[in-house]
Image 1 (cartoon, rainbow over the protein chains, first blue to last red):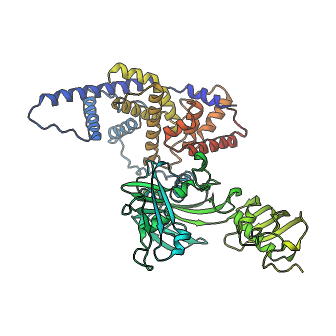
Image 2 (image 1 turned 120 degrees about the vertical axis):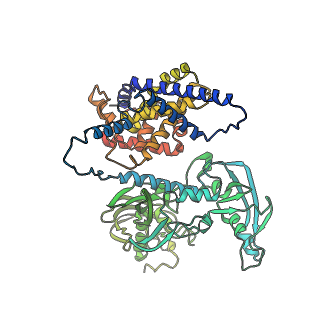
Image 3 (image 1 turned 180 degrees about the horizontal axis):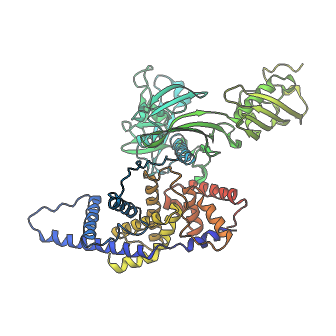
Length: 466
Length: 160
């Protein structure tokens, strides 16, 4: 059994000879009409000859074809065997000719109920949404690093800010044909989203809002942050290569465009769209290392349809977002997405975060270890120098979800935890409740010491083992 | 374009266009309608291609676009009931042929498309990306998922 089986069956598929005749005859007729039309227009003098819209020309030719076809009594294109148009046409004629003979009034035919492929809808819209996040938040577009603009941001009212948060900001010209402006990226982002969005918590709507027309007024659908964190807008008022003061009018007001240069992923400059070098060339950028995509949001499971109603359904999928500890995540975060049929089009009307198997397990383990003095040497969120480090990422890095049952929201996990000296110290398998509607709880745990307890490696502020 | 040239183009590419359209639409009537539209577009377009390869990929690109347009129409959009595989024009000589073909045809449209272009037309990921307009990474993902689904359906890895 192999792909040659598919090839062999496909090789036997050939269009009817009738199609060949129809296509070629029709094209030849069109050619003749075109030639005749040209001859006619050439022979008329003193009249302005207007060339209409391309499509209208085509429609005109098609109409002419239809008249000729009808006039000479050729059934040709419209009535070809198997054509849907032809079938419809034929059915109408048949109904008309038999109508008089039928005395009994039959019930009007009813349209069969439409059965939607919810999985396909969820797949298409969710994938679009994820792609748009990657474009907007991680600069996942093509660009030309040879065409750049550079500014130097500072705060004239606070030197400390200038030293810590300002500095060189370089942007590369976006060459992605889909996007010519920040508004284009916003349009792409909101394409799968309903004009009215519900924000939900534990399945209950706590806020509804309308997607604004302009990106400057818009907020992130899930987290309510302004899109201007990413889409900076037009900064043409600043000269390329200049220093840009984010507070030119004193400490109480911030210049929006200047601030956009400082934090934005995209800015517009003299009619072109630019993407931030810091975003696309950092170690975590989508295009670092010779175009290798490495730092993007992605689906780890395809959408699973949960419940359906008239003109509405819910689906759940898991999304791996590039936050701390995400590299090893098998699942990531669950997104519970509601889809509504609005004016004949399916749209996303809410996105709520559900279970987070890895993250919640790490939190549960952190709580569990923290409360047991015999594990005071285990790193649950501090780096080796005893300072706050990667936080929960210390546990997530070493954690693997081996089983996850979404119906009861329970995970089985395995983790090898480090002591504060960075050595493998604890081998832990646990069953954990990760229900997003409840508290993270280690339900049972099997822990083996790999490295003996060493009080010299105790966590800062840890409750003493003794 | 003169009649001889039209005939030559039709005879050279009609099978490829029809087979692509059938892989997408899963029925003869739609595939034939699409094919007619594609060739009318080709004969109306005043394009000179560098070589046959480019002309064929242009035709397949138009085919995929027209298939998508058709399935975006009210008649087909998200409708499950209206797109069963039409068996009338299919010939299976072995059970394996039937199993594999039905497995491929049971995949979602976008997976069928990449499977057809990759395995039947033997296009590269990059070439498929140019035809479908999807990113190369998306094509790779679709191929991976399509193979995985085929394995799930057939119960074993499909030899390539």
